[in-house]
Amino acid sequence: MILQGLTPTETQVKSLILWLTEQNHMLYVTDGLSRDYPLAVTFDNAPAGLIAILLPKTSENAILWFRREYRHQVDWAGDPDKPASLRSDGSWDLHPRGSFERWTRMTENSSRGWLDCEVDYAQALHQLLSDFLLQRTRLVNTFNDRRSSLEDECEGVLL
Image 1: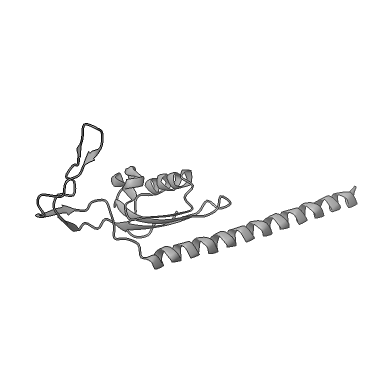
Image 2: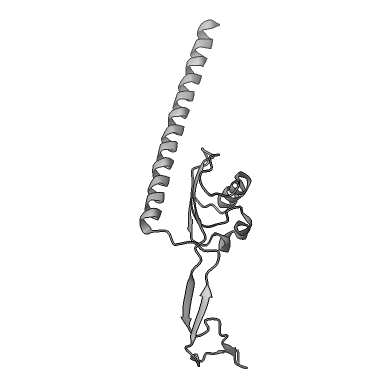
């Protein structure tokens, strides 16, 4: 495993790859990793964003790009968490906010979003590497079949 830059530890990356594999993610893109994988908040250099490419099972390789947390302020016109009230008949009673006073919240555990071109490049790289590995597997299987056939022929000649 090769880790470059600010990354979680090798053990933490291995556990993340195992989780991605269990989820059947071949390409995974997020700006809030801990929403899907809560353990990520405990990681060294806690990544908030991730693009992950998992290659086919014939290879045990993965490529992961981490993005650090980006804390920034979000302003709302009124309290965005103001609860709606439940009526006795089970329906919700929604009221317009009585105040549009500025309500501020700091974001946590999220990164800057990934650009469309970054996601497109990751998808193209995944496809390219998957095709390459598939071709390589086919060539190795063909070679092994031919070698086995030649070994069988040689055995027949020696007997």
